[in-house]
Length: 229
Ligand SMILES: C[S@@+](CC[C@H](N)C(=O)[O-])C[C@H]1O[C@@H](n2cnc3c(N)ncnc32)[C@H](O)[C@@H]1O
Figure: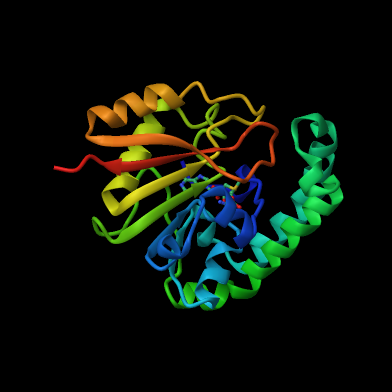
């Protein structure tokens, strides 16, 4: 099925949010990093500006800047309304209000939009869709997946998760995924079956607590690495 821009809600996070979500330190940021499902996040633009090596993969990069901007403009009012409706599920001590949170996300998306043409030219934004990626095996030190797997577990089935994570683990030495909960902030029912399937494929995983928490109680990321030997 062709990817339709109307199917996605672009909600780009900031560099700081990525650092906190994935507990990224100097050593991780110094490697070759893949941001899969990066969408309009500012992570790529900011890491590249700091001299890092980063590629983002997302079907949305098949669209032009103005089409992505128009889609962002279209969904922002709905984002604010949804945050108000689901207020009780979020931590507001860190985010302020729904309007402030959306304003910060908008600023992150502006950073992405300003970098988009140069990033496409440099090969930092690559049109691609899980569960298959176009990169050569082992190209990356670290692959990140923010707010795609597990979160949209109602749309992306268990087998999709297993195929996608095996693919990522073939292209990066380590894979990190956040969050491990669904849109209702409930632990994903896919999590343990997916971990068992990865284990059978020689991929060890651990759920690690991180400092990032936007949905209440959702503060764990999954680290996946090939078992040595
Ligand atoms: C909610 S956004 C998250 C964006 C960014 N990672 C962040 O946290 O700010 C989800 C992203 O996943 C992308 N996406 C949807 N289906 C995908 C697929 N099959 N493979 C890779 N990315 C996909 C969407 O285009 C969208 O940009």
